[in-house]
Every structure is written in structure tokens, then in C-alpha cells.
Image (cartoon, rainbow, N blue to C red; front, top):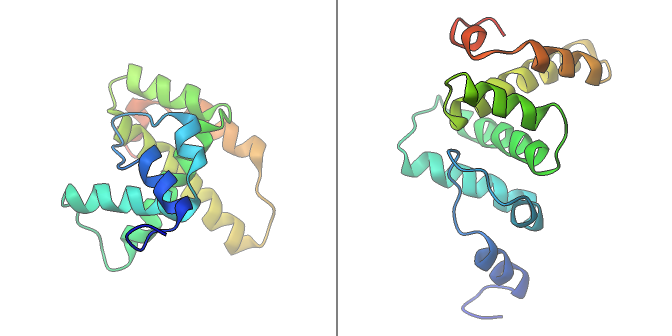
Length: 140
């Protein structure tokens, strides 16, 4: 233990010290750190950016960011292709993450509401149909 940190924490700090949604984290580095550290990094970014949330929403927002970044890092298609498409169409990477995250959040809500299995085919279809124009109109 050094300065109250365990060896694993020191390795994680050395690997990735901050997160910025405008830049894709190196997949190996992102996946090397544990999930709670990823969430903390995303939450820290939003705090430093002075993003305002309704009470308690910052945790869910950070979790959804992490899910999308995980899918990008693991190359879960069509997520990386969708992020690339949305940025080519004019969205900033951060906004593209929000667009994909909104679909994830809606699908999770339906999953819990209707007590049904996650429908990966539906998720992929929704990502395929997602465009920057539709996102900006709230039609995702």
C-alpha cells in the first residue's frame, strides 16, 4: 500500500486518470479498470463540466455513459458504427453517446416494466435507424 492506495488502484490511476467524452478512451485501458472506477471517471468529468442534473440523475447518467463506452471498447456492433455515423452527421461524440444511451435507457425501462428479456435484435434495429437528424428532433 502506497499513500493509502492498494496496488490495483495505483495501476488503475496510472492507466487512466480522467475521462472526456469527446475522445474515445483506449479500449484496453478502459476495459482494464474496474466498473466503479469507470463510473467515477465519467461522474468526475460531468462535475468538472458543471453539468446540472436532477437529484440522483448523475449516477444513472454516468452508468449509461459507461455502458456505451464499454460497448464501443468491446466493439459490440453496431454501437461503434452508430457513434461514427452520428459524428459524421454532425453530432459531437458526447452527444452521440447520449443518443445511443437514450436507446439503452428506454430498452432497459421496457425490460423492467414488462419483465421481459432484453431484445438485442430490437436494440440493433433502433441503432441502425438512429440518425443525427432524428435525434435532434427527439425521434429516436
